[in-house]
Image 1 (tube, rainbow, N blue to C red):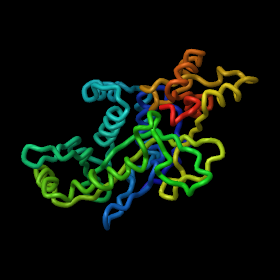
Image 2: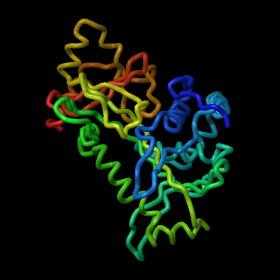
Image 3: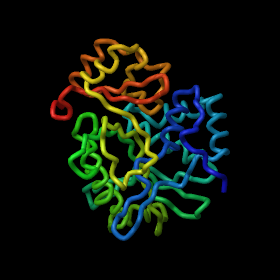
Image 4: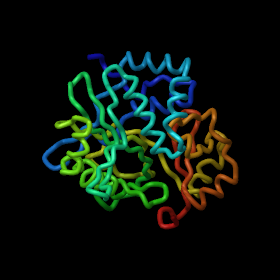
Length: 297
């Protein structure tokens, strides 16, 4: 088996879609594994090998197959759906994998209990795999007075929280494959046994002086920072604010500084109402949030 290439050393691609593909499939997951009952569910072992790097480079020189696939299969700009479609494309193209089906509903008579995100066959392990996918961007609250907790990580709108997302995966989505209804759905594809995997991609945005994150998080996770509007204004008062640009949500996966928008006063006003993402020339990420976030959201 080929040696994996550290994702931090991924080459910079010209095609926005190829950048998003490489980021989605080969950046470090937020968690490496999860205990689900008596079973340990791990992230996919589909690392960025030299062969996959060559494939991405060739696709970068001509991204028409990827553009065509996304045009035909992804009719939404929602990050989660784009993320899933990029994974579907990768699994159809990679010699080590074969995409069987995706978004398979699991029903009990007329009631839908949930769905399997992805079913694929791994030629290396000779196993069928049930893969659950998620992409998340969480901001960590200062936790100097408490031990690190997954409940300290919130989505930009605060309705989303990391511990709740992982609990949903552990208690509902992954066990679904072991229910009678789940087994019936799998047998429709001739599947009697399978391995389960979990890919939670994203970035964790750390606050200043925050204590170390929870032990269950991947220590190699992608990191950003977050500041309140007041903190950002103060920190950029004597520097060129243009080093930071506004990164609109549809472009969070590709994360490209050169195509981000000039950061102007209107963006700071927007950040006074809800968190916005910024990016600098080093392609570091920053959330600028209301002064009383998260209480203000």
